[in-house]
Amino acid sequence: MFGLFRNRARDAQIARLYDQIVAQGRDPALFVEGRVPDTVEGRMDMMLLHLFLLMHRLNDEQGEIREIAQGVCDRFFAELDRAMREMGVGDLAVPKKMRKIADIYTGCSSSYGNALHRPDDEELTQVLLRNVYARDEERLPQARALAGYVRRASRALADASLASLASGSLPFPTPALGESA
Image 1 (tube, rainbow, N blue to C red):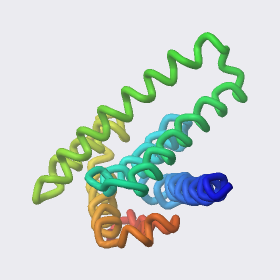
Image 2: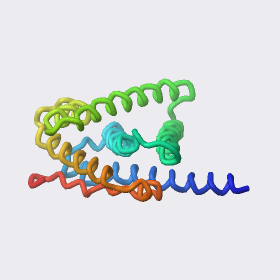
Image 3: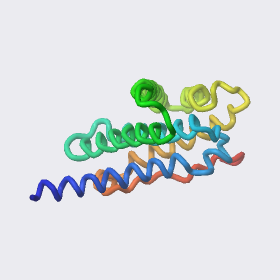
Image 4: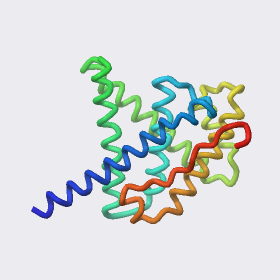
């Protein structure tokens, strides 16, 4: 009986974390000030970026928090699968599209993680320019601002206690991406 209660509590934690990732990935500032393309792909890029930030923070953790992180990732991909089916993507095409999205997530996570280990934001800027802005050099100022936001978000998550994260609280900063950012 206690196992059932614990699973419900964990499911609630996972739901809170997932909801925060989605909400942060949909922040209008990303699309207005940051000029991320307001398309299905652009929105997906922002949600994948915020999922990466959480997973990057919890990558070396063990125990229950690791299980919660895996649950968030599983929920994220299950919701994408469901959304594709609701949009009318055929049952035979969904697995293929999900594999492609998983490959994109894996590649982006590797690129973002490597870039965050650098002391400056130049590599991160270039990775974001490539992944989010389709290599559009005119978007370089926005890619720089987004890189600064990603760095701030990564620091905020790194400074957060595991208890805070496990409770479902993600301290994402406001994505100030305008000219003064």
